[in-house]
Image (cartoon, rainbow, N blue to C red):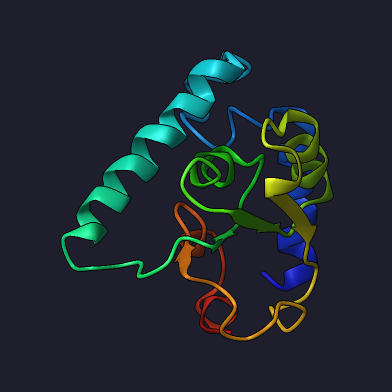
Length: 145
């Protein structure tokens, strides 16, 4: 599937059930309470950062990137640990939902990226980059880019 097809698919899914399509789809279709949904992200990021700290990373907690942020489940969780978090997603519907559900104001910023490049982000500007449940949804050649 090319980038446009991928975008159309995820935009449609995000328009229909933006929380359910991220976790538990289709078993929990249209069945998520937002607080419960975002708590799952907090638990995931807290555990990930606890493991990472054993290896001395990240060295700083200024800026983080959530690649494939969807509605911001992990972006907002990282907002509890970093001064600024940028969430990037391919689906306009997901970015719109993330902005609507954002609980951290300017600390969490969301970006629509409809290309196969992250060139719009400054190189080496992140202390921590996280991506979960994203790369397996795209063709290997897109994931490598």
